[in-house]
Length: 287
Image (tube, rainbow, N blue to C red; front, side, top):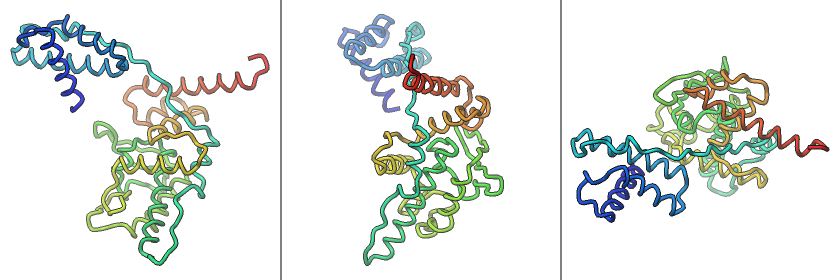
Protein backbone atom coordinates (compact mmCIF):
# COMPACT_ATOMS: atom_id res chain seq x y z
CA UNK A 1 0.00 0.00 0.00
CA UNK A 2 2.83 2.39 0.82
CA UNK A 3 4.49 1.57 -2.50
CA UNK A 4 1.28 2.18 -4.47
CA UNK A 5 0.59 5.46 -2.66
CA UNK A 6 4.14 6.58 -3.36
CA UNK A 7 3.77 5.63 -7.03
CA UNK A 8 0.52 7.57 -7.43
CA UNK A 9 2.00 10.58 -5.66
CA UNK A 10 5.01 10.50 -8.00
CA UNK A 11 2.70 10.22 -10.99
CA UNK A 12 0.66 13.26 -9.95
CA UNK A 13 3.81 15.30 -9.33
CA UNK A 14 5.05 14.34 -12.79
CA UNK A 15 1.71 15.37 -14.30
CA UNK A 16 1.80 18.72 -12.47
CA UNK A 17 5.33 19.36 -13.80
CA UNK A 18 3.94 18.70 -17.31
CA UNK A 19 1.37 21.49 -16.78
CA UNK A 20 -1.63 19.27 -16.11
CA UNK A 21 -4.15 21.50 -14.35
CA UNK A 22 -6.71 18.87 -13.36
CA UNK A 23 -6.88 15.11 -13.12
CA UNK A 24 -8.79 15.08 -16.42
CA UNK A 25 -5.59 16.24 -18.12
CA UNK A 26 -3.84 12.98 -17.20
CA UNK A 27 -4.04 10.95 -20.41
CA UNK A 28 -2.17 7.99 -21.87
CA UNK A 29 0.63 10.26 -23.10
CA UNK A 30 1.26 11.49 -19.56
CA UNK A 31 1.25 7.93 -18.20
CA UNK A 32 3.67 6.70 -20.84
CA UNK A 33 5.88 9.73 -20.35
CA UNK A 34 6.02 9.02 -16.62
CA UNK A 35 7.10 5.41 -17.19
CA UNK A 36 9.63 6.51 -19.83
CA UNK A 37 11.07 8.92 -17.28
CA UNK A 38 11.43 6.00 -14.84
CA UNK A 39 13.20 3.95 -17.50
CA UNK A 40 15.66 6.75 -18.27
CA UNK A 41 16.36 7.07 -14.54
CA UNK A 42 17.54 3.45 -14.54
CA UNK A 43 14.70 1.91 -12.55
CA UNK A 44 14.45 -1.89 -12.64
CA UNK A 45 11.88 -3.48 -14.94
CA UNK A 46 10.09 -4.94 -11.92
CA UNK A 47 9.78 -1.46 -10.39
CA UNK A 48 8.44 0.01 -13.61
CA UNK A 49 5.94 -2.85 -13.92
CA UNK A 50 4.71 -2.21 -10.37
CA UNK A 51 4.37 1.52 -11.05
CA UNK A 52 2.43 0.79 -14.24
CA UNK A 53 0.09 -1.40 -12.19
CA UNK A 54 -0.32 1.39 -9.64
CA UNK A 55 -1.15 3.86 -12.40
CA UNK A 56 -3.74 1.52 -13.92
CA UNK A 57 -5.36 0.90 -10.55
CA UNK A 58 -5.49 4.63 -9.82
CA UNK A 59 -6.97 5.70 -13.16
CA UNK A 60 -9.56 2.90 -12.97
CA UNK A 61 -10.49 4.12 -9.47
CA UNK A 62 -10.71 7.73 -10.70
CA UNK A 63 -12.88 6.66 -13.63
CA UNK A 64 -15.28 4.81 -11.33
CA UNK A 65 -15.54 7.92 -9.15
CA UNK A 66 -16.34 10.05 -12.20
CA UNK A 67 -13.13 12.08 -12.01
CA UNK A 68 -12.04 10.82 -15.43
CA UNK A 69 -14.36 10.61 -18.41
CA UNK A 70 -12.38 7.64 -19.73
CA UNK A 71 -9.77 5.35 -18.21
CA UNK A 72 -6.39 5.96 -19.90
CA UNK A 73 -4.73 3.27 -17.81
CA UNK A 74 -6.44 0.57 -19.86
CA UNK A 75 -4.09 1.41 -22.74
CA UNK A 76 -0.97 1.31 -20.57
CA UNK A 77 1.28 -1.69 -21.00
CA UNK A 78 3.89 -3.07 -18.61
CA UNK A 79 7.44 -4.20 -19.35
CA UNK A 80 7.91 -7.93 -19.20
CA UNK A 81 9.70 -8.74 -15.97
CA UNK A 82 12.58 -11.17 -16.32
CA UNK A 83 12.22 -14.13 -14.00
CA UNK A 84 15.60 -14.87 -12.53
CA UNK A 85 16.45 -18.37 -11.40
CA UNK A 86 16.23 -18.58 -7.61
CA UNK A 87 19.20 -19.32 -5.37
CA UNK A 88 19.38 -23.06 -4.75
CA UNK A 89 21.73 -24.74 -2.30
CA UNK A 90 23.53 -27.94 -3.24
CA UNK A 91 22.94 -31.15 -1.29
CA UNK A 92 26.28 -30.94 0.49
CA UNK A 93 25.63 -27.31 1.42
CA UNK A 94 22.32 -28.28 3.00
CA UNK A 95 24.08 -31.03 4.93
CA UNK A 96 26.54 -28.51 6.33
CA UNK A 97 23.74 -26.07 7.14
CA UNK A 98 21.68 -28.66 9.03
CA UNK A 99 24.62 -30.29 10.80
CA UNK A 100 24.08 -30.51 14.59
CA UNK A 101 27.25 -28.51 15.23
CA UNK A 102 25.96 -25.54 13.22
CA UNK A 103 24.14 -23.54 15.87
CA UNK A 104 24.60 -20.83 18.39
CA UNK A 105 27.18 -21.48 21.06
CA UNK A 106 25.77 -22.04 24.51
CA UNK A 107 27.08 -19.40 26.83
CA UNK A 108 28.66 -20.55 30.05
CA UNK A 109 28.44 -18.48 33.16
CA UNK A 110 26.64 -17.97 36.41
CA UNK A 111 23.28 -17.02 34.85
CA UNK A 112 21.58 -20.41 34.69
CA UNK A 113 18.24 -19.00 33.49
CA UNK A 114 19.90 -17.24 30.56
CA UNK A 115 21.70 -20.45 29.59
CA UNK A 116 18.39 -22.32 29.62
CA UNK A 117 16.81 -19.75 27.31
CA UNK A 118 19.76 -19.84 24.90
CA UNK A 119 19.63 -23.65 24.80
CA UNK A 120 15.88 -23.48 24.13
CA UNK A 121 16.34 -20.99 21.30
CA UNK A 122 19.01 -23.23 19.79
CA UNK A 123 16.51 -26.10 19.72
CA UNK A 124 13.92 -23.78 18.18
CA UNK A 125 16.29 -22.58 15.48
CA UNK A 126 17.29 -26.14 14.61
CA UNK A 127 13.63 -27.13 14.31
CA UNK A 128 12.92 -24.11 12.11
CA UNK A 129 15.77 -24.92 9.72
CA UNK A 130 14.83 -28.60 9.49
CA UNK A 131 11.15 -27.87 8.94
CA UNK A 132 11.69 -25.18 6.29
CA UNK A 133 13.87 -27.49 4.22
CA UNK A 134 11.81 -30.64 4.84
CA UNK A 135 8.50 -29.11 3.82
CA UNK A 136 9.26 -26.11 1.62
CA UNK A 137 6.56 -24.12 3.44
CA UNK A 138 6.48 -20.33 3.35
CA UNK A 139 7.83 -18.35 6.30
CA UNK A 140 4.34 -17.00 7.04
CA UNK A 141 3.00 -20.55 7.09
CA UNK A 142 5.69 -21.64 9.54
CA UNK A 143 4.87 -18.72 11.84
CA UNK A 144 1.20 -19.70 11.79
CA UNK A 145 1.75 -23.29 12.92
CA UNK A 146 0.17 -24.47 16.17
CA UNK A 147 1.40 -27.26 18.42
CA UNK A 148 -1.30 -29.64 17.19
CA UNK A 149 -0.57 -29.11 13.50
CA UNK A 150 2.24 -31.68 13.47
CA UNK A 151 1.03 -35.27 13.12
CA UNK A 152 3.93 -37.33 14.44
CA UNK A 153 2.23 -40.61 13.55
CA UNK A 154 1.73 -39.81 9.87
CA UNK A 155 4.78 -37.50 9.62
CA UNK A 156 2.74 -34.64 8.20
CA UNK A 157 2.07 -31.02 9.11
CA UNK A 158 -1.18 -29.11 8.54
CA UNK A 159 -0.47 -25.75 6.93
CA UNK A 160 -2.71 -22.74 6.34
CA UNK A 161 -1.50 -21.16 3.11
CA UNK A 162 -2.48 -18.24 0.94
CA UNK A 163 -6.18 -17.33 0.71
CA UNK A 164 -6.73 -19.42 3.86
CA UNK A 165 -6.28 -22.63 1.86
CA UNK A 166 -5.33 -25.54 4.09
CA UNK A 167 -3.07 -28.36 2.93
CA UNK A 168 -1.22 -31.31 4.44
CA UNK A 169 2.53 -31.51 3.80
CA UNK A 170 4.79 -34.53 4.42
CA UNK A 171 7.63 -34.06 6.92
CA UNK A 172 10.86 -36.04 7.07
CA UNK A 173 11.98 -37.91 10.18
CA UNK A 174 14.88 -35.52 11.07
CA UNK A 175 12.49 -32.55 10.99
CA UNK A 176 9.91 -34.39 13.11
CA UNK A 177 12.57 -35.20 15.69
CA UNK A 178 13.83 -31.62 15.75
CA UNK A 179 10.33 -30.19 16.21
CA UNK A 180 9.53 -32.68 18.97
CA UNK A 181 12.81 -31.85 20.71
CA UNK A 182 11.89 -28.16 20.61
CA UNK A 183 8.29 -28.78 21.71
CA UNK A 184 9.25 -31.00 24.63
CA UNK A 185 12.54 -29.54 25.85
CA UNK A 186 12.79 -26.02 24.45
CA UNK A 187 9.34 -24.46 24.20
CA UNK A 188 8.43 -24.93 27.91
CA UNK A 189 11.42 -22.80 28.92
CA UNK A 190 10.14 -19.83 26.88
CA UNK A 191 6.37 -20.28 26.92
CA UNK A 192 4.27 -17.65 28.69
CA UNK A 193 0.56 -17.25 29.28
CA UNK A 194 0.28 -15.33 26.00
CA UNK A 195 2.01 -18.07 24.01
CA UNK A 196 -1.28 -19.85 23.44
CA UNK A 197 -1.03 -22.79 21.06
CA UNK A 198 1.67 -21.29 18.84
CA UNK A 199 4.29 -23.87 17.92
CA UNK A 200 7.25 -21.54 17.44
CA UNK A 201 7.80 -18.72 19.91
CA UNK A 202 9.94 -15.65 20.08
CA UNK A 203 12.37 -15.03 22.93
CA UNK A 204 9.64 -13.22 24.89
CA UNK A 205 7.10 -15.99 24.57
CA UNK A 206 4.85 -14.64 21.82
CA UNK A 207 4.21 -16.30 18.47
CA UNK A 208 7.33 -15.99 16.33
CA UNK A 209 7.22 -13.44 13.51
CA UNK A 210 8.64 -13.69 9.95
CA UNK A 211 11.41 -11.20 10.67
CA UNK A 212 12.77 -13.39 13.46
CA UNK A 213 12.64 -16.48 11.24
CA UNK A 214 14.62 -14.66 8.55
CA UNK A 215 17.22 -13.66 11.12
CA UNK A 216 17.48 -17.27 12.25
CA UNK A 217 18.08 -18.52 8.70
CA UNK A 218 20.67 -15.87 7.87
CA UNK A 219 22.48 -16.42 11.18
CA UNK A 220 22.62 -20.18 10.70
CA UNK A 221 23.99 -19.74 7.18
CA UNK A 222 26.55 -17.19 8.33
CA UNK A 223 27.71 -19.63 11.03
CA UNK A 224 28.73 -22.17 8.37
CA UNK A 225 31.20 -19.82 6.72
CA UNK A 226 30.80 -21.66 3.42
CA UNK A 227 27.11 -21.79 2.43
CA UNK A 228 25.84 -18.98 0.14
CA UNK A 229 23.51 -16.62 1.95
CA UNK A 230 19.81 -17.09 1.33
CA UNK A 231 16.59 -16.69 3.26
CA UNK A 232 13.57 -18.85 4.11
CA UNK A 233 12.32 -18.54 0.53
CA UNK A 234 15.68 -19.80 -0.69
CA UNK A 235 15.19 -22.93 1.43
CA UNK A 236 11.75 -23.29 -0.16
CA UNK A 237 13.34 -23.10 -3.62
CA UNK A 238 15.98 -25.59 -2.54
CA UNK A 239 13.45 -28.08 -1.18
CA UNK A 240 11.39 -27.95 -4.37
CA UNK A 241 14.40 -28.35 -6.62
CA UNK A 242 15.76 -31.30 -4.64
CA UNK A 243 12.35 -32.98 -4.77
CA UNK A 244 12.26 -32.70 -8.56
CA UNK A 245 15.87 -33.82 -8.91
CA UNK A 246 15.05 -36.81 -6.73
CA UNK A 247 12.26 -37.91 -9.07
CA UNK A 248 9.12 -36.28 -7.63
CA UNK A 249 6.54 -35.37 -10.24
CA UNK A 250 5.61 -31.75 -10.84
CA UNK A 251 2.01 -32.15 -9.69
CA UNK A 252 3.07 -33.56 -6.30
CA UNK A 253 5.54 -30.73 -5.78
CA UNK A 254 2.79 -28.26 -6.63
CA UNK A 255 0.62 -29.73 -3.87
CA UNK A 256 3.46 -29.68 -1.36
CA UNK A 257 4.31 -26.04 -2.08
CA UNK A 258 0.70 -24.92 -2.22
CA UNK A 259 0.96 -23.30 -5.65
CA UNK A 260 -2.38 -22.38 -7.19
CA UNK A 261 -0.93 -22.73 -10.70
CA UNK A 262 1.29 -25.45 -12.07
CA UNK A 263 3.09 -22.79 -14.11
CA UNK A 264 4.58 -21.41 -10.89
CA UNK A 265 5.95 -24.82 -9.97
CA UNK A 266 7.46 -25.25 -13.44
CA UNK A 267 10.03 -22.59 -12.58
CA UNK A 268 11.88 -25.22 -10.54
CA UNK A 269 12.30 -27.46 -13.57
CA UNK A 270 14.31 -24.67 -15.18
CA UNK A 271 16.46 -24.48 -12.07
CA UNK A 272 17.24 -28.19 -12.26
CA UNK A 273 18.04 -28.03 -15.97
CA UNK A 274 20.30 -25.04 -15.38
CA UNK A 275 22.25 -26.92 -12.72
CA UNK A 276 22.40 -30.00 -14.95
CA UNK A 277 23.92 -27.98 -17.79
CA UNK A 278 26.45 -26.42 -15.41
CA UNK A 279 27.49 -29.86 -14.17
CA UNK A 280 27.75 -31.12 -17.75
CA UNK A 281 29.98 -28.26 -18.81
CA UNK A 282 32.21 -28.78 -15.81
CA UNK A 283 32.54 -32.56 -16.14
CA UNK A 284 32.39 -33.40 -19.85
CA UNK A 285 35.74 -33.19 -21.68
CA UNK A 286 34.06 -31.88 -24.85
CA UNK A 287 31.39 -29.67 -23.29
